[in-house]
Image 1: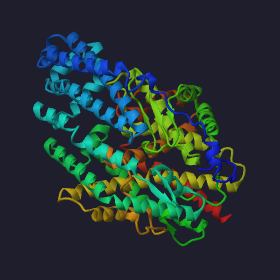
Image 2: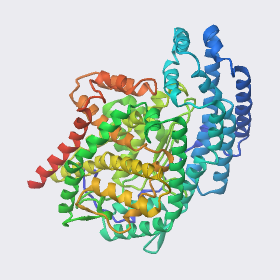
Image 3: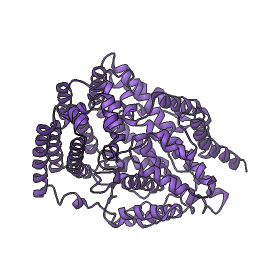
Image 4: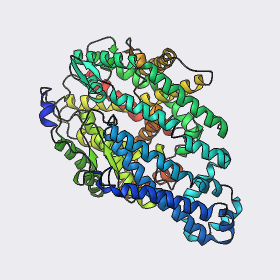
Length: 608
């Protein structure tokens, strides 16, 4: 969404304004990939894991019944090992994300991943054996105050008990992951990072190419679409093979573990009930005509066409702010919005800038997109961006810093309980975006500026809610069809186009070549069915923000308590202090109504 003043600047300004973007300093983890501490810690992790296995394997039931302090010691030792191994794999993963096509980074990441998998195979017994202990014995042991600290983790473990396999099968699945799903994930990453897109004689990596789809000039957007279409189409066989293999790999795991629905393993990991997700999906799909269909009809009218081409879906509106936004301005925009809500929140977010926790430039070979990586509680999170000076990049900064603040606040729970389920992990990020948007909207100096900002916010929310539920629907179709045999790239494209047509509506023309645009979405590869978490988070934040705007005092404290909880509480317990419940049939409708009201206002402004 645009900043308050619409100022047009020549495209060449980007090279001036985006100099000296920050790159992260990973030395808080390790000095370099050649640092002796890396080798030492890898050896220590393996040695300690072997000793741990020798000390505790086959004894946990006895300890729970007869020596609870020893069981607590075991859990703490396991937690320490999780932190050590998490530090190593986080460092390797961040180095790799910084340059996925560098042979040194590739080898380092692969070697560390293999060694961590070997070490962790000696720890695999621990959680499996914890789940074999009788419920009554566990409940008696949990009366110990120190063990009760780990109750959330123990209870989450035991939710997976019905899907647990015999120890040697679990170990085989674990060790084979290096040459199975992890290898196919890596192939996707390295293939995507190595692609180039020929646009007007210039060969661009994927992030700058995708960025041209929001260029103010329609001819540039069309050229970018054509180049993306051509390169994606040339690589369809590879992406179809990766997709087919990973879908089959998941089907094998689900079948062995006796998951009934193709997304049940994701729901379990997210600690959310299938019925809650189904209600969300049904509510969003039912709202397509009132949201995306209606908005894109308005946008087509604003751009003076009957139908928007695929490359115009995210085009900036006439008079929108398309200037290059300098990094310092982006920083100030986000931090001032955070500070107006809570100085403590702004202080935590400020650390990311001050201490080298952000990698901002778009570089050749760098992982596309953006993320906030929590690493481990003994260290701190890092944020990766591909900042190119668009207002969407400012909102992405607000989003990822929200994650970062959440991860810092949850860190005190330790390696076992700091991680937050994906559904709730999107709360702080979307809330951070909303704070930034509301701050900018309050500065709008004319109805025209307000209209442009509201339109861009509606568009972002549609991308977060409608588009992600369409992605989820697409994934369900792919994984369901894969159970009947391999899918051709043409068939995957047909499934893609069917959900896109349903979700985007008649005002969007699905141009020739758009059937290949499923290929570049990394969530389909790395985290099947992750995408509904974005819609969950957006609708939740819409409801949460309404509570905030109506609250007189105390909201910030309750909100911080929510973030500090990390993975220690169920979504029902976290939302209760705000009077909200995701199990309420009207909960999702309330969240979606926020988007609908923005479109209502846009229609009213359009008539003035």
